[in-house]
Amino acid sequence: MTAGTSAAASAPRPALVADRLCRRFRGVTAVADVSLQIADGARFGIIGPNGAGKTTLFNMLSGELRPTSGRVALFGRDITALRPYRRVALGLGRTFQITRVFGDLSVLENLTLALHGLSRTKLSLLRPWRSYRAVTGDAEELAASFGLAGRLGTRASELSHGEIRELEVLLTLALKPRVLLLDEPAAGLSPAERVGISTLLRSLPAGLTLVMIEHDIDLLRGVVDSAAVLHHGSLVLEGTMREIQRDEQVRELYLGRAGQ
Amino acid sequence: MTAAGDGTPAAASPAGRLALAGLERSRRLTGPVAGAAVAVILVLLLEGNGFASTLVVDMLVYAVAAMSLDFMAGYAGLISLGQAGFLGVGAYAVAIAENHFFSPWAAVGIALGVVLALGLALGIVAVRTKGISFVIITLALGQVLYGLAYQWTGLSEGDNGITLASLPSAGPFDLNDPLTLRMTVLVVFAVTAGLLLLFAASPFGLSLRGVRSNEARLAALGYRTGLHRYLAWVIAVFFAGVAGVLYIFVNDLISPTTMAFSADGFLVVMVVVGGLGSIWGPALGAVVIVLFQQELSTYVTRWQTLMGLTLIAVVLLSPGGFWGLVRAVGRRRDALITRLRAGQAGRPGRAEGSGPAQEGPPLALEAAQPRTEPPQAP
Image 1 (cartoon, each protein chain N blue to C red):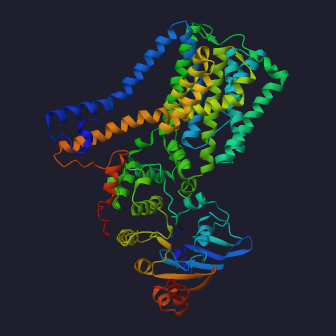
Image 2 (cartoon, chains in turn yellow, green):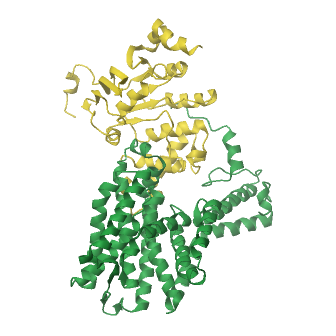
């Protein structure tokens, strides 16, 4: 850090920038010309009907998918060409809509894998992973902080649906990301389980930038400040949650269509 | 099972306490005691000069190859149908180097170097693929190696194979002495098993299980998964080469049939029947398959039919192979210990929920229990 000059920069550098992202699948445009600027520390939601291109957009941000055109930048650095594991190392973490945990592994093993993710020890061969007391201690602490303490020895595939969702978020949090992308963290959960995940999301560290796809407006309202609406792959509206909820077009597109 | 199996354990009764102490001691001691017993039996069998010692040595050589395959197949999910090819390369390289006037020790070094280099080079191709494509690529690589052994007669002497003139020796340690050779094979087997088990228990080994379980998720956790699969492949190929060196020492002859497709298949069978991802299981699988091939075949002409039926029975009855049965016994004991402990603590028989894996019913009950509250923001 250079002394004294950081304040001279005009605006704070955004954490994550999508610059005119496009993605076509065999002539079908899934995401068309989407630009977003997400400020450092912001809590941002992405909503839109099914098939609007939300997950495709996420996959381009996290690197699972290459954009047809456009760029992605993380803290001012162009990461468009970087593969997912490199983006993770730069502080970009994500969860998946279709839950991906390591089903054959225990909760402790799942979390241990995540904790070794950014360290050189992930390639260490000559020492049992159980002997890394600092790492397993962190894993136990992480599990305890979200009510999985009693489940450390349980195989992830044998957890309840809500617990699997929590584990999914914990795996990503273990990497201490600076920007966290959550793809429908509450999908398929019962109302009771939603409360658990909502509490988890609200207790995330303050400096963390959060971008979250979610259908449940009530859940979203408790967690994010502003949001963007995606429809047919295009950004139709961006604003505070209050503005989004008031907007007629959004009601028609999204809330109305849901028939609630 | 026993009285404690019906969910209402003998609470704090003296009998219950005694049973608990016994079971806990068994959990601590089973591994070391079984290991020591197997070691003693192997040494005793290998000391004799009879048929048994020859059989056991063959089992150990194939056990090294099967364990090497298990390291990539059982942990990283990379099922290779070319592993016997690398065993063959190790064996051929020793014989060819000796025929080109290298000393026996140098020949061993050259063989291991060649296998390692080949593993590093071919891995770049093989590891680009996954799943069924990987199986096919390794099948093709194995067949290329087999074809070379068969047709590159200038180097390999074709289907006659190559014989080995003499084995390494250093002072009193002389591998040309059959007993020394057999004990050395046992030591190499033990060291290989120890190393592979250590690798499997390391963070790297855990990452391989992550690759097998969900590779995309692992990449999203910052792992360069291709590198991990590549290293697993290189390690597995290297130890197949080690098995090849032992093979030529034991047999004094290497010919293309050792690398044939059926040999690749037998290795996969050893691993699957023994129990994927357990290292010891595939060693056990090698013991059984070699027993079928060499012993039963002398008594029964239709030994292959019998072997086939055995394999079907094992795969149907225990998807985890032989080692799966061993593990099931261990799990049952752990569940019993948990229940007895709960009884000792005076609580009604509820499992603690921290055992590695429990039987169905108590788990399903626990899942329905309310969990601890998520924490409040500090």
